[in-house]
Length: 194
Image 1 (cartoon, rainbow, N blue to C red):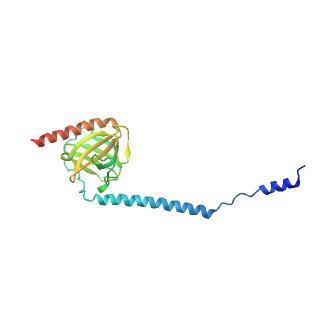
Image 2: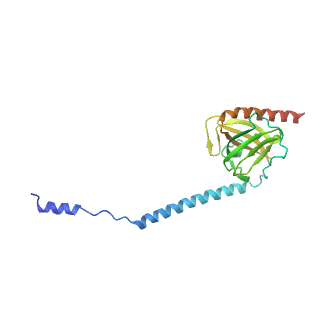
Image 3: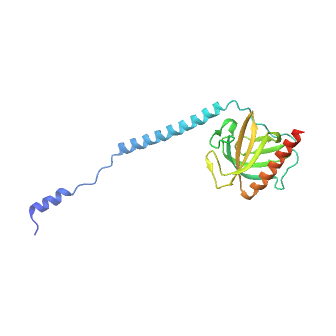
């Protein structure tokens, strides 16, 4: 038989479940949503400010009506455009004129230059005499891949050297693109020196 003080002690330990304080929870959720919105707004303003600072970059060239004969057996390369940076500074993203917008891409190399067609973003054209170098690399502003996983094309626009990063859906194509682009660039430089 249990004693009376023991029953009193057991009854004192039994409590009802805590009542949820909905006002506090809703307040925290609203505060969190406002914080996320503030961070997003600051990032967007920073992106716009960077575009304003790069406002001296002229409009991007467009493909000529007669681009010339395609140079590669694969007329175009499908893949992704990962962005452009100041040449040699893989973290200094260029956002002016939509160059910072990642997108799908169709590249076509012709005797006139490199045609960059981006669905949902601004297309641009790199004339042959503006091309400076092509290489394989592993990263460009916000995208890091395995060694040699990125085709980087260096070109001049508005007196500024830019690196643009592309990744083919078939990465085995990168080597052929680098060889062909560099051959074209060297040929153009040799003919220009005469």
